[in-house]
Image (cartoon, rainbow, N blue to C red; front, side, top):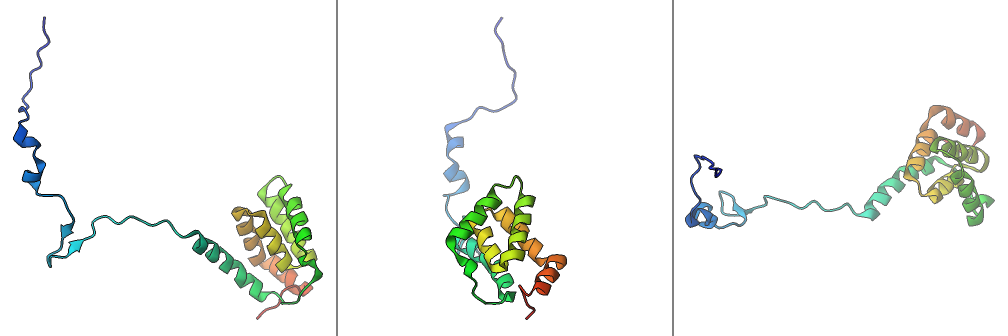
Length: 149
């Protein structure tokens, strides 16, 4: 027995497929003044340099509070070694604590350089939060590692 499907749908004609005559030619939408309207704008990817500049701007604010004295701790080899020690820590919290210890021992500028060398934005952000915490901020101030402006 053949399967017959009863449908109340109309068959499609050739003229039904001509959408251009039904809806007009596709193109940019016009405003009431006849100017082309931007219906879709492609969102541009943010410039990576701008992202890094914004991130660095936050840390530059912190560094502006730090005394600008030059120490012997700015040796790239020492920064790499301290970064390796921090990287070997198992979780982000212990890495941040290591950076806090480095800041207390060798200065905030040096610790920020070590944190940047880790290239871990999460750890860098958490370290930034710790630097802004009142307890650490006061301890660094007492030790003379930062001063109020």
